[in-house]
Length: 151
Image (cartoon, rainbow, N blue to C red; front, side):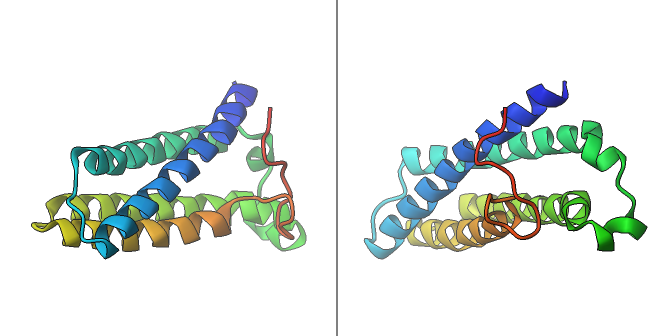
């Protein structure tokens, strides 16, 4: 179960990042170019939010079965930055990021003008992207080095 969740979480990460980048691109293009908010833009907004929620659920599942987390104790975290990163920082930042994305998606959906929809989507999804990029355990991270794909 652990390896299945780890693989899915690793793969869905890239789908989510692609969706966020595409959403931000379409939102900025629509906002700055004064384009109409199309059904495709709405589907992209909704699909990106859905993939984000799937990724979060996979992450929570991984958190519950991870051997790294099962041995995690907050009092020892100062001596083990990787444990602190996965035990607290990663899960907290990713939960915050998906919350921000969900709020931004809901607010964009409720805007009355196309420009307001695009602006709201661009700003909230960009903030989400920053949070996610900070919380990903990149191979070059001093806190937790992980490969770009895990199997």
